[in-house]
Length: 112
Image (cartoon, rainbow, N blue to C red; front, top):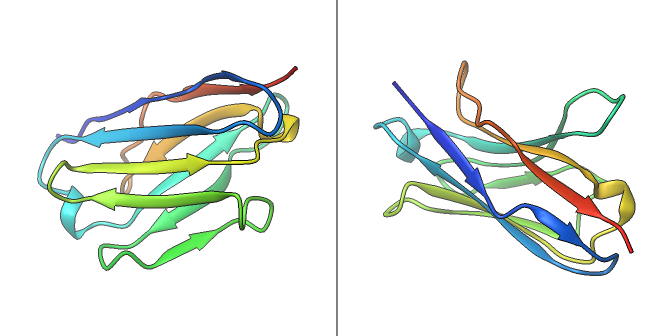
């Protein structure tokens, strides 16, 4: 059984920063590609960033240059550093391990 627990969401002003964390239980983490997704109200869930077990990263065009995904295998944790946040980044952010595992989501609101 794998559990993913996200933290770090909140309310931030445009231009601000947040760091999301996702702590994973179980033995799946170190060999797995991990990802962050987000879902805004009325929109489909979309991939934000992913990181392989070799730390190869991929980003959605909308967040390139602003967000950074990283992982700490010793802590079984994946991070999403979000800088220069925009109102359109407002969404529930989800951590994902290989199917079928998802975190519960954490709300990020960017507003003045």
